[in-house]
Length: 81
Image (cartoon, rainbow, N blue to C red; front, top):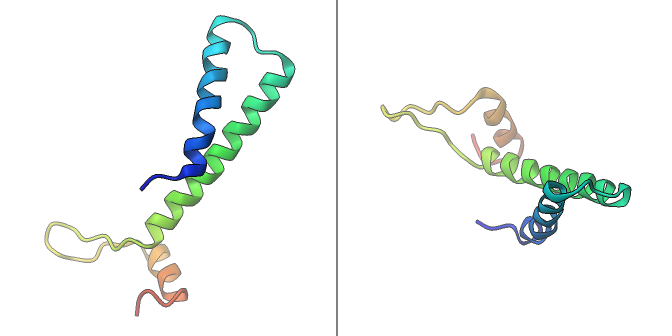
């Protein structure tokens, strides 16, 4: 599943990375790069967390091996008994 917000950040992040390979970034470019990377990783982590708390993990024997922490969160939201 694609996140349009993350996809919108990537071109500029990549552009700044390419510029950085050729020359030193200006202070404003460095600041922008840091800000964009922080926004990207924050959103990425939130998406991953959301996906993990909505997932039930089953081993090859059919046993539920979802961590207790995730089970607790799922119960708090009413997604698990």
